[in-house]
Length: 201
Image (cartoon, rainbow, N blue to C red; front, side, top):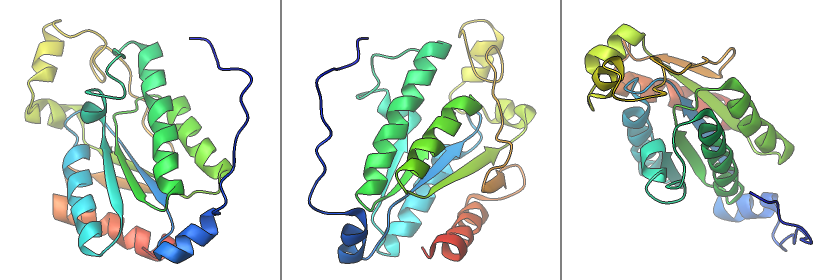
């Protein structure tokens, strides 16, 4: 892939602060990370619904859904996983810059990729909240709603996170949710309490 040349960034006439004031909401990215079947998508859906019922403009970006469109050209090699997260990092930043609450739900197994996502938000002055959706491997294998762990153990799926590909857990996430101990409702309550306290959401 060749990088574009002879381009110039064209700033708009509306600044982020003005947009946030007019819309009554400042943008933020809430980045869910964790193993497959840890509960990321389920909690993200519930959080999005909760925030929308509070009249907060929210939008969920889901790992599987994105691969049907924007990232349908990517596989699951380390290089493709890196590019997958790079694209979503930029997309979520755009949503948050537009004053949306961007809720991303991606395995995002590599710390370096998640650090990149955080870095570009910080540079843009946009809040970034990493949420570690944590469940032991034994628990997610038992859940296995899509039968993926069974296939991975049988060697039918290559580069499967947690089995034949690594997952690097967050070192210091803003929020740590143990889904083998908390219900979906309790998880949403925990995240909402943090957002209310730290970001007035």
